[in-house]
Image 1: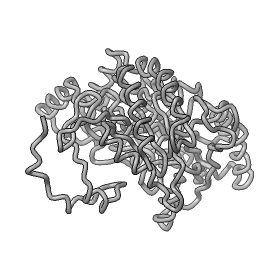
Image 2 (image 1 turned 180 degrees about the vertical axis):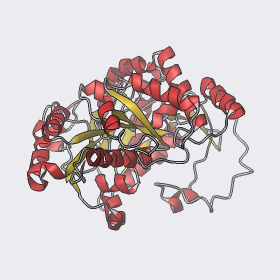
Image 3 (image 1 turned 45 degrees about the vertical axis):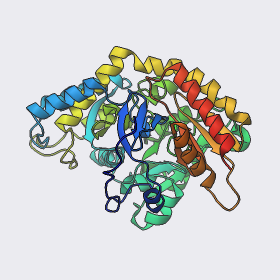
Length: 442
């Protein structure tokens, strides 16, 4: 049954994020409802949610357990500050997250998004070194092609070129960047971790030699880079970064906004790769996208280093009005409960080889230049049209909607990261439909 479109809203006032606003408002796609792994659009069409919202709804849409938890929390306590007072849900969720994290990472600071969480982690790193008497350690090392959100700290440490061109005047000083780890000559059509590229971690030693380790506070990387097109770390690369950071007293931060809570078939990417950072940044899947929430999981020694001075003094002068919001925490607790009860992280791990095999079957499809995958995530690079970068992927996006797929595209890269609840048949159908779409893309 097609939905009534007579009351389409006025589209002019909303300045949409990361969107070609003029194009959208001439060719709008309005999502009216979501259930399971599908969205319903304003014209009644149903589309498969190929990217779990924006990497944030692995349980699918319309989970009654989360809705009930949010409703009960709103009815009981809609808001309480966490400045100088607290509420039980924040402490309960922090303890639950700590149990999911790698051993030793057991102190949780709440924010409201991945961007805020990244900036919080960077501030915690600086504060930690200051508390230990290393006030010279103020430099942050990020990585090319990295996306760490849109806060000033995240843009500074990030390596998305358009962000840096546009907002470079606001970038924090004392930031440098590692080279990115993607080289198509050696990595094209890799399945999982490429075997080439561990030597790229040695660039950190060069930066240490350039700046002196005594000035470097932290290195921040995405264990698997999602927003820039599922860039998978070479085998041994993260291990080598960990070794270098440990030797020089530099904190290692994993931005797991995308990979956290099961996307790679483990609680966190840190556990999948067997590399424990000093801090983990999380957001997105923690509430299944129902309510904004993010945060930092810190190693206990980082927290304890700041717990000094008079007891009545604030140890970390940082926070947000909505840090640990009761409703967000209720959604987070319900989300983790569902994940555990239904074994959905194990489900993601079981679906990984299926997605890998299916998506790599597109190697011979029109316009395909490369395919990469890790966990329940994959990316397909398309050959750009001459003098029209991004046009081919946008065409695939539009044709995808016509064919029942809501894809994600950045530049000329298509990304898929289906919900953990997806059936094997749905994963196969997603890829089969994508093959048909690519055949129609000019």
